[in-house]
Image (cartoon, rainbow, N blue to C red):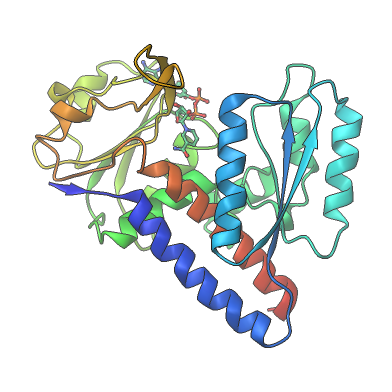
Length: 294
Ligand code: NAD
């Protein structure tokens, strides 16, 4: 069984990005610049944004963190996004989700300039993905593709099941795996909360991407011998033995499923670091277009 280690793969990607950045800066160009907007002080969001800022530094990128109070109005948040859209020194903008209930998340996603939408959530980029055109791919599915590439997982002609159809993970993942591209060309079944006989569908799959947010949902009985398993889930479950009072659990019952899988991601340390790698790759792409105009 191969452990699909996201820490190792993302470190390699960050190192390659760092080399690329140093070539640009040695030539007198500025460094790539990611701006993150964090609204409120949700614990998980704080952790994710801190990890993104740290990774920017590791890859030689500049980052700016815009912190807004959770009482910020929708118009104030929109103004902050418009400011970053108009700032030529900013290559990528991300607004950390979820947002407080009084803010319309879709309106915020659509306010980000599609050319700086390095999370790949804007409908323009979603449309480009569907049509196989160049654009920003949502960071988590992009990171998973990079992980499959890092470990050279053969996907062509395989059957894949994606569990979860969100716009940020499941649906774009199903499009990527079914596309005619490296580490694509699968025959994909996209499952969701209304899917009947999920176990029967999963047990036939060569590759399973679990992205539903239900701790240890995918059991060994649902998995074919030798399947490749990618666990996207991150759920904080209470744990009085832990210093933080919680433990992170994925959507896969790792201990039992890893005995049948040919390759599997751990949680934490699998898809999480790869999401950041995807984000940095998108930011680099935006930067390259800005500074070289190609
Ligand atoms: P979401 O809540 O938007 O979507 C969940 C999807 O799962 C829905 O489409 C729903 O239909 C489906 N679903 C729910 N119960 C189901 C069931 N019993 N059977 C089949 N399908 C079911 O969630 P999301 O934003 O896509 O995130 C999914 C998980 O991935 C969460 O745990 C989230 O925290 C995690 N996540 C991790 C990363 C990362 O970097 N590792 C990034 C994004 C999301």
